Amino acid sequence: MAKVTEHIANSKGQPLFSIEIIPPVKGGKIDELLNDITPLMELKPKFVDVTYHREEYLSQTRDDGTVIQVKTRKRPGTVGICAALMHKFDTDPVPHVLCGGFTRDDTEDLLIDLNYLGIENVMALRGDHAKPFTSFKPRKGGHAYASELITQIREMNEGKYLHQTSEYLNNSDFCIGAAAYPEKHFEAESSRVDFEHLKQKVARGADYLVTQMFFDNRKYFDFVEKCRTHGINVPIIPGLKILSTKKQLEVLPRLFYLNIPEEFATAIRQCKDDKEVRKVGIEWCIRQCRELKAFGVPALHFYTMSKSTTTLAVAREVF
Image (cartoon, rainbow, N blue to C red; front, side):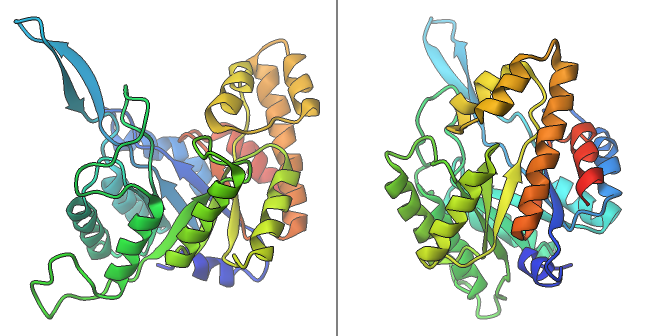
């Protein structure tokens, strides 16, 4: 197995193919997920991100009429999926590690398990707020920012554990990925503040960055130039999503604070149904990928939602 940065270094300048998948909803089976992504795995992605989904809360009314919030898990299985990917496909998994829902001790326990399995890469994220709440609050004893989480992972790589109970504790050796936002994180008060947060993540030990999805390549090109100008020299991998429904034309900009070029938006609006939307979305993404390859990106990273069809249509044209 290898680190993401090693895969990039060994690619001889050719962009890598990578994907992100999500665990099945509670009650789902891993066989269903593996069957869904098998066509993509035939293209031999060098690494596969596996998302982690924090707890959610459901309102329940007691007999006395009081309402309480009950914690529930919706998508278990990130660590198990990573182990299955290594065993079945001989690929490097990149589990997402979150601030939200974890204490520092929980994080260390997770990292110990990942290290034991031989997993060498992690994606360090703050994570979303716990639904149905509308703002992010860390758990008591947890991290509030991804930069703090990165620091804990880096310190574990240096052999610094939270409770140093033995002189025989081995260093971990995780390659740390972090998120970047070419069009600003939707919660950041300004682009300047958002960029300062990014610089903190790199300064504290992020080895590479993966961007939020975007549909205008100029946003990525300008963002990379800004990073390089300000001394951020780690690999910056573009994250791509294939727009496949008319509803996404409204939902994605609102949820992710991104711009959809008017040329693309107009083409989507003219589609009669989602079948036509998928065709237009695939063609747009192929165009994006070809421009990004010509720019010399380290990899093309696809947000697949664990479905193969549209990503496969694009990947077969550009790899």
